[in-house]
Length: 92
Image (tube, rainbow, N blue to C red; front, side, top):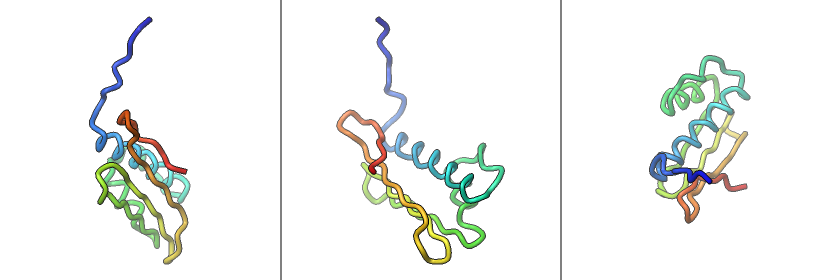
């Protein structure tokens, strides 16, 4: 049996990666194009145009809360936390 090494980064890196993937998904749902090669800051800049506003709350080092607004009302909301094994999981 082969043992896998799953230590590919710190918990914060894993949370930021999950947030980046989520924001790219939201960019596609919002009708934007050309976002697939963007990093976290570039995707945020794209999503904060054309009446859209996206907030990423990183005040807790073990969690990220992402909220997307359009014209002042919440359109999408998601939360990611680290579990006891250091995995970044989406909270439903």
